Image (cartoon, rainbow, N blue to C red):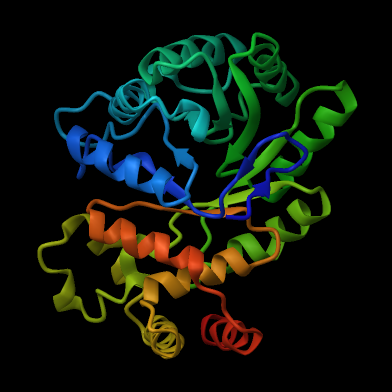
Length: 314
């Protein structure tokens, strides 16, 4: 399977990332091991997590996702087959992007992940209380120590991200090689208007989250009644249950039918075909879901099909 580079870094990834936010939440340890084995065996290599995942679950503290991934890495022996991405800055235990916090947080993450390095370490959100030069200097020390290979930024606005790139250049510091924004067929404007021109001009990789819009683009939720029994989905999905959202689903249905595929596979293939997108992140809670996601890697959309999806979601 063809791999894609991440900015100017030496990292290369397959064009689909596994979202580890479900580990310790809707996926227990044994199922996580099965899914991760199948993901790697199916050709995937990027596993995305964060120190805070999934602290929002009653009874959790945070760190559960990294812990499960670490146990799998030790048991499977597949550390050299995967690219591990984690994040710092959102968790109350290690809040913010001050250099001392970055150092403490990475040590904790490495311990949970049972590895000596994190391939791609993200600032999970901006921290305006810390000078960009200080944050990037903190990341530089982690890279110098061999604990991190490359860095990225999640949830940054275009102006702030551009400033970070400029500071890296001005002070000869490592730069954010990857941006992680929300981006999918029904949430396009925020990324395409300001971020996309910037990252393409600066050769920054893009790994986007909410690739299936909280499950809406799977086609499972077409009316309010479909959300019954899915409280975790209802808030995000309900916003798409309008004429535009249903029009996107209709376009997905048409393309999917032509390829004997599913709407989710087409939605992921559309992202993979977008110039500048390195990989979308998608999560699976069952082997059937994972098989469906991996099927998107084999789907090639025609220019007319991409145009139809563009038009429906404009």
